Amino acid sequence: MDATQDGFAELTADVVSAYVSNNSVPMSELPVLIGEVSAALMAVKTPAPVSQPEVLTPPFQSRNRLRRTSSSVLTMARSSNR
Image (cartoon, rainbow, N blue to C red; front, side):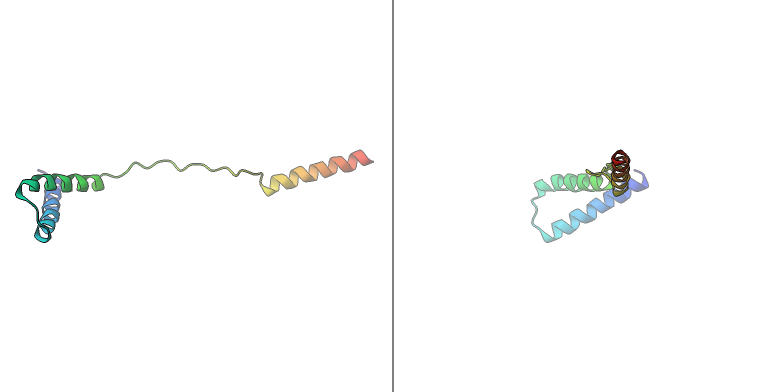
């Protein structure tokens, strides 16, 4: 075993030992408990994949675009009235 696995085995033993000292666990269930604790610690150790943030677009036009659009409409309206 390498240092990481040794530390992992020690952490698993510490968690199981603390649980067994405070709870009644049948001897036949001890291997299952050790396996479940080890699997849970492995799941915590493995980082979750990082997904790319979703690019959000507003459901409406920005104020600047609205200003440009309305000013060009006003300009066209003024020039057509002349």
